Length: 361
Ligand code: SF4
Image 1: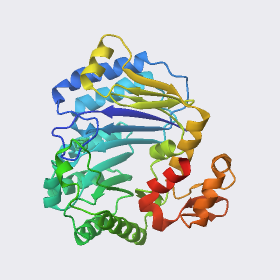
Image 2: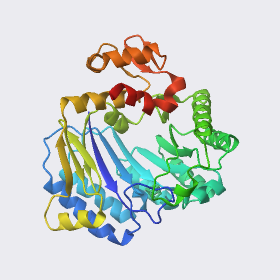
Image 3: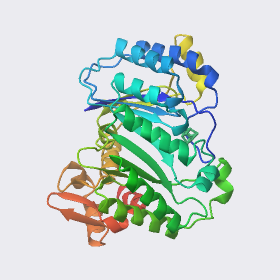
Image 4: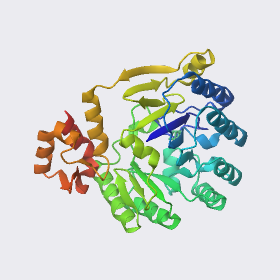
């Protein structure tokens, strides 16, 4: 399978925890659309069937209706989307009205990922989010009215000073919305962001409690956990993200976007000014390029495979490559076998990174 990613790097205002490639420079959108058109024309990729499209950011829903139409026109003019099964569009509540939702559906978008993060006003303010709970409700309603049947809601837990009880209320709230997919991310506080000073205001133990509460509650609500942070109703896994975890080919356009085609990885410049300047001057916006070694490929396969609840194949190529360490992790009780698969035991999922690192290094 192959995926196409378009990065829309604009947000009206930076959230206080944000470490993503996004800029408060919405006046650059027109120029950006010209640049992304150039990038699509300029970069030559071997022909392959694109089956998923993901328009992420940033805040793609910040684009005006005309700009969204233009973006789709640019893509469809140059890229064959006839085999596409899933088109996801990321939205934030404050910039999604009914007209935009209807337009997206009419353009072929069949999955929306809506950033809620929390249903607690105080926490939303703390995180520096723009939308209120009321705005979220209205955006969600607009998606339903427009006819979307595949909606993901992004949630964040482990916020400084958040209690388990508050997180429990967020999970209860999402239960009533009953979306098809939920992503729950533990807040990561990065150096250089305004929240850095508060990083010790919540412990790993509390975050771990919140994580397991989510697993337990979402399971009872009928969501299957198929990846460390992702839960879906039957048949509603994110095909685009699965393609990353299963190491399919993908092409990314936009600043900071990565592509990996036949084990060759390319990453674009993450600086918007450089990205625009290069493309509008007819140059490639590529920042780095590498061909993965067999060793890199095995490491990645293990790292990504063990994030999935299906794990990796017992006695498959990855298993054989890391056999001694995998067997040791099974003996220590961190991994379990299930038929012909090996995976991380549920109770160790919160510390999966250290288990995976121990096997790889
Ligand atoms: S909406 Fe997302 S990308 Fe934009 S500032 Fe907030 S966290 Fe960053």
